[in-house]
Image (cartoon, rainbow, N blue to C red; front, side):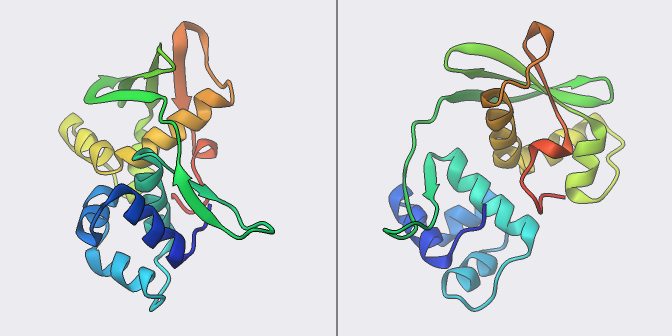
Length: 168
């Protein structure tokens, strides 16, 4: 979803976040947030995705433009997680609970490499990459669970199709 500068400012205000806090949570430069919020320049797509994902993971819902205008509001956050990342088949797995049900989110090496357009050769490097983009992975996981794309044994395998346009 694309958001406006006003929605970004309003979402930040709902969370009582500074521009620095948003930049840190989204893993973008503070100048990216500041320039976007004052309509000086539009962030690159992957940075917009990171900003939106960070705000959504923190509990903000964006309301699309309608007769009453666009806006933001709090949403009920139903995804519980910890930041532990474990190795699995060259990629990683993250344990989450959605509405009390446990799931294992499998993130392939291809997805991890593609999000930063690089190749991560060590488990430690993959963990760092996943943690740097945690809000993006969490939102993709939540949307995938909501849409019912769950395999046997409660495994959720994230693919490129599970991410917003502009992520890669």
